[in-house]
Image (tube, helix red, strand yellow):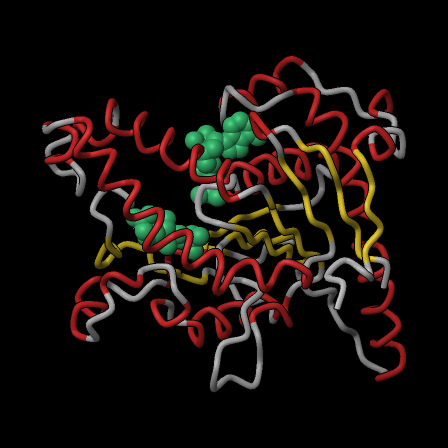
Length: 307
Ligand SMILES: Nc1ncnc2c1ncn2[C@@H]1O[C@H](COP(=O)(O)OP(=O)(O)O)[C@@H](O)[C@H]1O
Ligand SMILES: CC(C)(COP(=O)(O)O)[C@@H](O)C(=O)NCCC(=O)O
């Protein structure tokens, strides 16, 4: 079957004309706050791609709100509109967290009354102790390494307007869940959920994570490019975060550069690329929108679900 049969395939040049950014110019302060997320983000992409996408998301939000209100009228009860949840999926190192933080900034700016909160699903990875007990330490990021039931219960609580929900904290410094530390999500209007696994259909569950999504985004690129971004990020971390003696990769930062890069290449090939091919790419066509990136993270094509 043709994977994209139910998608409009829209080249960048066409997409950028759908919503003219002159309606929503960003102030210098806002541009600075985006640059502080990642100073390599292209402002042209923000204007041409992300701002029109925020307006597309707004269309979905309006429909969602209207359906919730109509449901309440039908049921003769007041239903407070549940939080609108946006899922973001894609490979490790394709730029999910950068996209998620950019979207959080832009949605907060464009819709100032909305409280936009963000989580990443790495907090739902089992702690290393559990992964070791199960003999799956080398499967971090694969479906069996996540407590998906906990993630589903969390999303249900968010939709039910529960307050002060605590989620575990994953540290890329210790490469493990930090015991006793949590992140708090409390009654957002919009919640962005970013992770490699968010469109997957876990075995033995009747409810899927994506059942809670009201809009979903897949960030896509050629795996050879993603490998380059993975290795570039690894190299820049060798010069910065990994220099901290308490960092999981400290020995690599202190040792031979080539050995460190060979190790990263092997993790890419045996873990992250394998995971991409077996479990992440097959979920791509579940997204409402696919952002396709080319060199330097430039978005060249947008695929928008028709139905
Ligand atoms: N739009 C972008 N422009 C430039 N660099 C980017 C962009 N998005 C991501 N990157 C870079 O690519 C690498 C991977 O991005 P990241 O958001 O950490 O990926 P993920 O969350 O998918 O693992 C990082 O080094 C990041 O700085
Ligand atoms: C923590 C991750 C599984 C990504 O988690 P996500 O937030 O996307 O759910 C990934 O960054 C990771 O650590 N992968 C294991 C192999 C590696 O060290 O790259």
